[in-house]
Image (cartoon, rainbow over all chains, first blue to last red; front, side):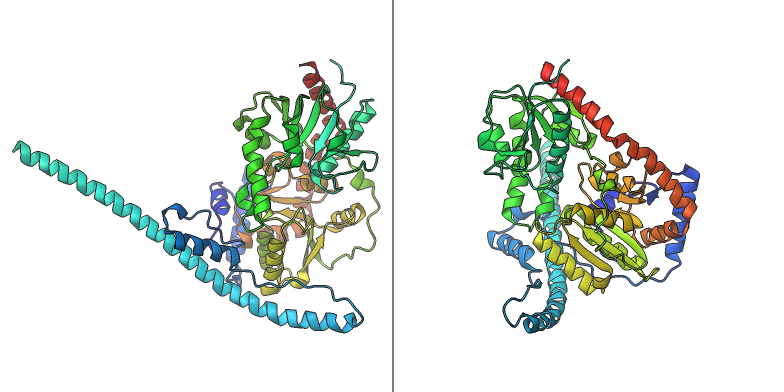
Length: 161
Length: 353
């Protein structure tokens, strides 16, 4: 299954999946029955299900070198710009141009869709790596502080001794 | 307490179908019905229109009170800051900028400025109204101390309209979503739900009714999803439709479904309840407040379970009726006479200050 959005995670804090406005006991029973029915069925998972606008909003952009920051922003803004909307053909040969236009769009957009899926996966990968790198940097800084504190403590103990 | 002789309103946009403008028109009808002189001054008009609207330049500053509808920052909100007339501010919520990523700098800027500039109106505002308690929290956070909640006035005229006979009735189970196609509405989640639901019920159709002009890139993304996941024939992108067509879509729907993440009120919930259509909606933002104890609230977007839920409700008339009974009770809270009476009281209070 695809990664859940922040809001999905937030919603999970509630005890039941749905609130249907009946008494608590019936509501619990309905929730359990639905979960059971869903678990008993074989589903085709829609993989991948790309999200709209891979956003850079959650990334620690301020900590990144400018070139990397700009590249990430550019990638997030353009990764899915492959879809071509249908246009209405005009003029004397519109009756001929319109179906030809639609036919070509069908194949172009099919290919564009596959390319977007690839772009989406790569963009997610880069964004995850940036987050991982940032987390490791923070850990490194914390460890450096700790090391310095331990060194100070050791120096103090040596001085006392 | 008495009503003012005149209470004009100011809006950013005056296009019929725009939720804020429709609401302003409903309030205008109420005010005129009480004998109060009332015009709507709009930032997007150069000449008077329809016996209702005038351009901002026609407004004569120095009146008793002006009702300013506040959503995104725009020409009207900047203009209002220059006025000497005290304001009755009506806050409709500002879609947070994070939902507007990728939709152009203009919208994001309008959203960010909308939030940043809201506190600048505190000094001029006698009373700040919000369409929901959820929105009222924004007003409080912006430093407004005199606030009140006034739900959106939705005249039941849609129920009285003959539905457009040209709207085709899909075969099988029909789901309906009404609203702007915008990222905060999470229409992609509805498509994902449809993807799972079609694995149980093959004959199912989703009608998406609402403007698709504001976020074209997002709409292209939705189209792409429907093609990629073989849903194109099960989804209708109806765009913004006439009132008669909207009535037809409500009447032919088996369920109204929304998995939106950000709503200041959500008018279609009330309309669906009026049309006696079972509502299934995410427990986000103002949605739980508007639904009260009615409808089905989704606390977790677990699509297989939600697909099973729709199947269950579709097949179980008794359970569906229990949902509808609660909705009929809830929708009474939005009766126009109740909202207009509350509006009158609030206007009188603001005038008396």
